[in-house]
Image (cartoon, rainbow, N blue to C red; front, side, top):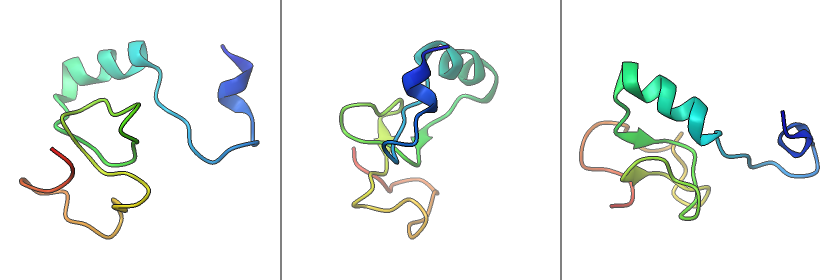
Length: 64
């Protein structure tokens, strides 16, 4: 495992692509509720600025 993934020097980490791909095969994600424009794993996503905890996770929301 990459030690930089476990550091507390920052408060944003992206999910490793291989791990996401494995889970996505089973769950078919359509929203990344905690992402940035650089690391979003789904077409629809929320950033720190759009705050996924304050928005609906239903269809039609997030950045497209």
